[in-house]
Image 1 (cartoon, rainbow, N blue to C red):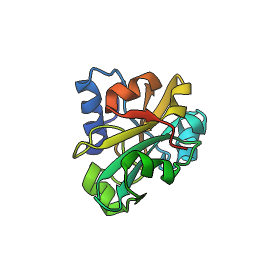
Image 2 (image 1 turned 180 degrees about the vertical axis):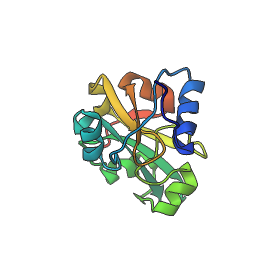
Image 3 (image 1 turned 90 degrees about the vertical axis):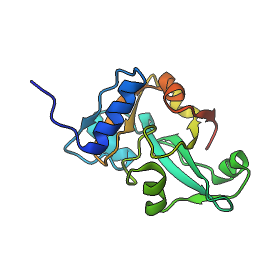
Image 4 (image 1 turned 135 degrees about the horizontal axis):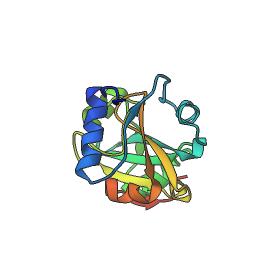
Length: 160
């Protein structure tokens, strides 16, 4: 049985994974994976194993920062302000799409329109297996948490 055809955004993520030599398989599910609880229910894992891809915007530079955080956690914006060296705010939908090429709810940890300063929530590393968005609000892929740093070039930090 062949795999169903992936949407263009999900294909882009799959191609980026293959280019990195990762054997991750993007899947598009009938159920929404837009929120961490929806994604966890759809793939049968804990909320903590879901990678939330959040885009923040520097309030002075307008520089984008991608924060990959466990679905069980919230980003402490004061911690992020310290890491970026300027106050931050959550990015709006237009800024997210402009910086990443994806809509909120489907932003993957890689394959963005431009390179992004990336921070990885250290709590994700407690899980051997995690799930990340793959370009659409119902596309995901499973990966080893140990591969997230190599995949993204991100810096592991405490963001909670």
